Length: 257
Image (tube, rainbow, N blue to C red; front, side, top):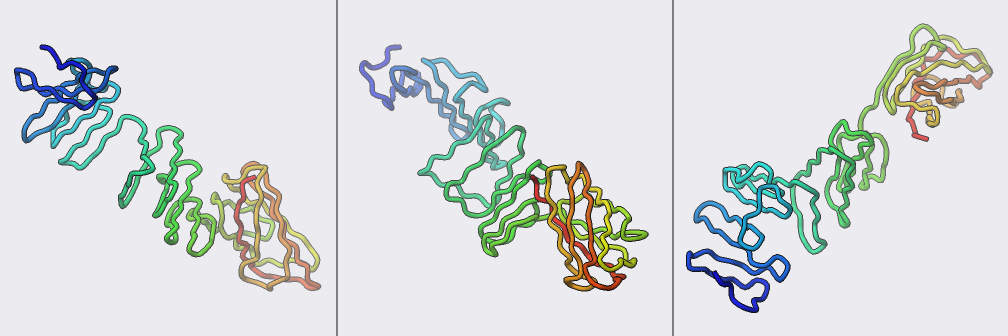
């Protein structure tokens, strides 16, 4: 079989057996285009030979039955499933539209949407999870930004705990933020009491933001904390001139340092 002389990329040639050949340029030469009516179209490369399943650059299409188990790119029209064996690059001039994108990380990945709209979120349970939605509040995710409300904080994982015997009794709450309801025992005037918050989310370099959010006398207390690995010492001072027996509620949030 003799191919035409001086072909240009994209030229086609039909041989005596009805096989269509397409010229891919001086490097890749001619490749065979096989058309199976009513089923699938398969392109193979390499001077008349066929490319083995899973070889670089392989593209397969099937309308219901897999052509091979290890194709780089295959489309199943029955299941409406596109399977990709490697990374995906979207050209700036293209358009990608979908209702939900789900990415299951098996290694470190960078996801970039230059003109993003909608929601980008890592799957639940992944370390360092970030959820962002520029159209409204994003449900789920340990960290979220709502550009509509202009708020930033923890999207989930808030916890609560109530202190036991007295105001120096330690509490345990493994959460990045939450509320601690203190015991209602008396705290004398101008006196500080300390208790330990055990929390696996806390590292020694972290900061704890504390607020007296409810219960008791507003403005009557000063709060501070010192972080350690897996815990923090929380100090509560009654700055009034009299004893107070109040079960105040302390709201806290951890800032990683």
